[in-house]
Amino acid sequence: DNEETPRRMLEVSTFELHLGKLAWKPETGENYDYKIARQRFHHVNADIYERAKQRQLEKILYVVGNDFFNFDNIAPTTTAGTPQDSDLRWIKLFNVGTQMFIEAIDMYATLAPVEVIVIPGNHDRMTDFYAQAQLMAWYRNTENVTVSDDYRTRKYIEYGKNLIGFTHGDKEGKRIYHLMPDEMPTAWGRTKHREFHVGHWHSEKTVEPNGVIVRTLASLTGTDAWHFEKGFVSATKKAQSFLWDREDGLQEIWHTNLPQ
Figure 1 (cartoon, helix red, strand yellow):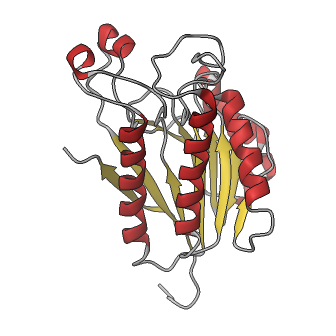
Figure 2 (spheres, rainbow, N blue to C red):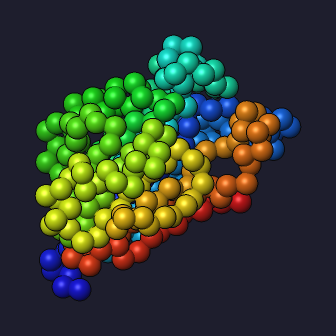
């Protein structure tokens, strides 16, 4: 690498934190609340930051959303109205969550220019929009932080020969395997390395149909009573970050596992 001209982008995401979720160990096998969620968030970002300090980066792509917030209404329910076990009032949920974003973005901005995109989840569709508006206003005059004003639920980032799609993953079904060339035909023609990164399923999976790698990323959240009763208890809790070379595509996947 020519260290004087960085040509790599670090993609950072803390998917599926479900801030505000409440779980009690005698009922679910583990405790989880907003303080534990915040500790996990800071653990992940501190780990990524220490690794990123060792690299020459052209930019950092910071991905916000994907059920970062566990509920979306004055009553603690998802966007669709499903009740949630929660330990936060709705105003505090928003204030705590956006402060966490700002702390992380400020930290990464000391390393390289940061681009922020927001991918709304099915738990927090409205709150993600409010968080996006808050971050757009907060960083409007910050030279090395850009917050996307794209409000679509499915977004694309073109970086050199890479085309990366982002969506929560609960709506498209198998159509996701065909969407990229249809929605981004000119960028498809310019690029060689193409992936979709999705959340929602709280477990890691990679498939590669039709020239697009579709990665379902792992989750950081705890197990609540509903998931325990359904038997959704065995997924590995971790975050995944991606180091992209402008020409040569994905170079590294950084796994940040939670401390035991």
